[in-house]
Length: 466
Image (tube, rainbow, N blue to C red; front, side, top):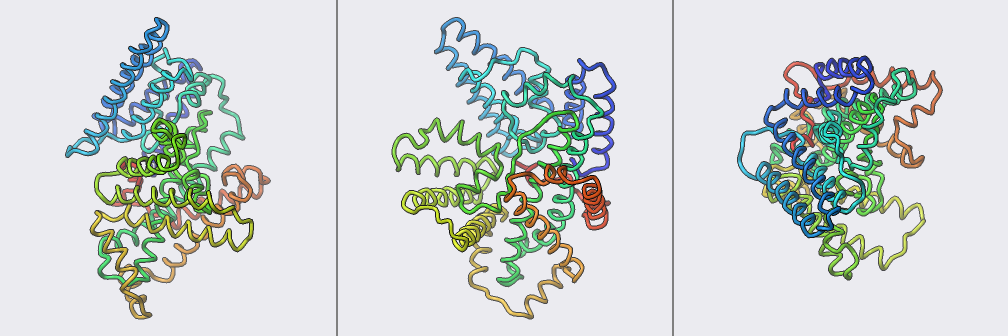
């Protein structure tokens, strides 16, 4: 959706409408435009999202009413029915054959469950203004792939939209920077890698261990740049209207353990699974074995959430096993501060994640097994490397662009990890000359080296299917 000329036109029109109408109408403008873009993609998606919104609205109010009447049992019952019903709706769509395109369903259903549970837990009051709640679920910036926002973070921002000033240069510059960096990650790095990755994973039998390993490495970078690129664009779009969305990524590939990786990867989903699944299962409060069992359950369900197929189950199981091993290791070994140990830990973590991504990317479990086995057994030679490059249409220029793109992303992540700041925010701390130079270079890179044009469907972000 984001990587489209029509979306940019839509965004400009929405910004103009937002700042032209009466300030108290701004939520209605964002809601109308969000519903418009959802309905334009799929009328069924709009109906489904509206249905979840209406149910969440009345269930939350009813829960509060029961609490006021000292009917805690009835409040728990209606919450249980609503949560089960929402999950059944999600399962019915995702795991049974159908032709409907219900975009973003996994994200707004999880958001609805969190909202109703939080009201039940009395973390905050139910939202009585239907427009605010509807916008909370449907905001177009996070419509396709999240993040999964919480009511106590996003709802208050929607009630202060009339305070947002159009001429705030710092906000607009920051928003523009987030979007530029997101488009670079998506169009220059992720989409260029996708061409090679698709070819290798489609026919792994034609490639030796070198290219199969490189295909797994490329996909590891591709899925990060694709999803993080989407997230940065979403953050930038929302920031135009004074809305701060949750950061979904905190330089995850700089992690030195699986535990650290999952604190930095798809943060809104990871925190949702922890708060609404892991802790209710008992978390780490009922002994070590129960803790490890809960971790396995959570990661397997995380895999199932991502898609239909045993390969997703195995991907989740692999990360569950990784996590258990990591927890056991931490229990009996103190964290070493030696530089060499940090490098070994980073390489081990990155390689482990890359291996798991093979099962995530492969079309099914059988092909994932074949792919992984061939990496270990086929071997490589100079001639096969050259033949593979020719088969993949990788000339010297293409290889150079891919290499530079990956290096830029990894180096920027390393710098941001050390400084504990996101790159767009770091760029904003530079002087005007440096900032405008970076803008210029990113724009040139996107237009010259980005993948786009007739016949190309750049709007299909990887996580759109989940």
